[in-house]
Image 1 (cartoon, rainbow, N blue to C red):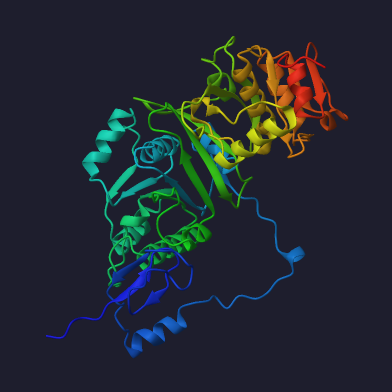
Image 2 (image 1 turned 120 degrees about the horizontal axis):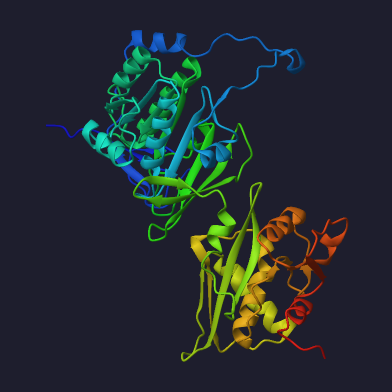
Length: 462
């Protein structure tokens, strides 16, 4: 009996090859080629049908002659989710929600379905991973089993399309896109071709019916959404759930949004009643900080349009090994090494025989350069064993020459510090131009890292 022919498909880009290769020739990824059966060849009738199907024979129009149509948004009943989406759920939009297992994706979307069903909308929850009884149990635990949204336990896309056309829902959730499959394709569910075609079918259904569709996406061990990268290009918005499962806070971040600003952040707290909104995020992140401990300083980070006060912590201890350790949680390891080199060369701190540990409290992750000055102040405070004080906030970008560079949206950062009772703030001197300083607040402009440490009382002048 002849052996059936197979092809190898790259799980990152969809490149096909008749034999296995360690490295994909198209995208350059290693060990991503997966063995699959080739798609069945179509007959002449099917080929003619496919040739006639694509396209709508549309005419080109001048942009100023296109009629203005306001996008209708529906509130999800979850303020933090509406913030990340740009004001609510847009009709006909396709939103991809990704995150680690157990982070709370299904819980949040179940609450979304319940809230919108209580508002009188018809909502359909499609699950290819759980039975209808399991979804009922989760809804009962969240206290929304009486909301009246529809549940469909199915992973056949033809059946999902048929039920969607019968119900005509305003909102539909598909959990997850990697479990859906089309029977007319020979590949297995979760493969590159299945994920691409199922997402394309859902996108077509969303645009034609005006139904807002939420897709749940699994993530790989690197943290990216599993499947082809074209999946993130097809959808209208990509939301990532972040946070450690050992911490109570969860962060919902928008990395792509065609209907709102990018990099907006929503904050939730995981509880037995589901995902609870954290409206005053800065106060929640600083609620347990130590006011008189060395190595701790507060800085204000901007997450989209939202200012967040975070507690930057550092611990410096003499090493007992030949090579000192550099460990960072919540900041880039390479950025930390750069700042430690600046402190040694420009400030004179002896760190070559010191272990340095950095932590951002609350499971936050700081990626913007405005956190540089706070990291330097925290390291110097821990090494000198001198507390900075609970009413100080520090922010600014640090260059290789030890200079402090300007940061964006400084006025909003200072207003957030004033709202939470901080009386002294150190910012780059350039940001003082035209800055409105709140009453009862002292704002100090600095030009170098050394000047910052002098103002904080960590070094003596001269």
